[in-house]
Length: 303
Image (cartoon, rainbow, N blue to C red; front, side):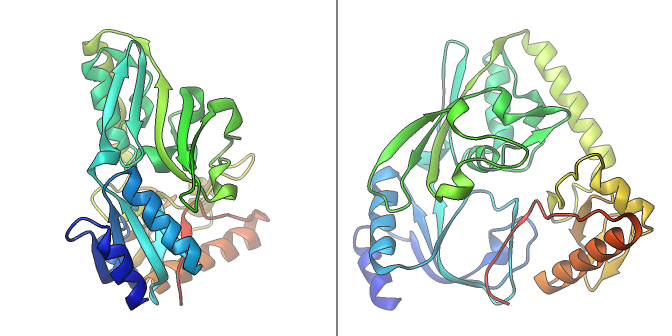
């Protein structure tokens, strides 16, 4: 790994290659061991070169946006984590279409749309993730999903060999899934079709949804948002609450007393605490209701 990092460092901007980085600093859960290295890809050329080296050496790698839907185990990540730099945070508008880099915060894209008098991203304005993560998971809230407004996504092959564009209809977007989960390719940016509207009306709708989120969700504590996918015909949070698990703790991990669909880090949680609590929830809900809860959060790394 050392020689590989030296090679990557030779074509990387100063300071963009860091060895042995705690993933607790780069995930919203604030837990997780160290990655062998973290590379901040400053632009598409830098990303392609990095991916080519990792592919050649068959080194596992993970492209991380805001880290809001990822849980890294306490043993860390045996491979290279790639963070997308500032060039992947650019936002452009042309007419009623907004294009945002994959590292752009969804909330920032929603605010930019509002400033241009464009409506359609209000539902996502409180989602604590990036555009890339939103497309990867087909993020949704308040009855709307990314797939309803996504026109196209530009991506890079996982070996860095090419870039290409897919239309929204080609992305196989469904409930918390996309084609990228199978291909492993890296989302570079997404383009969204929005609608003209009054800025004041857009702002009012964003504020209404943000107020609802702040009142009903534990936004002040580290978490990954809704931990479990919604089982068909049910709501995960209601099942967990009906099972009597609201407020239950394992170590520093807790089922949020505010919203049972969230597992939160009360400040001292390890990933092992979170996973133990997850399994307890799954087993209890299955025993009581016969429903299997599947994590929405991506769980990666070594025990």
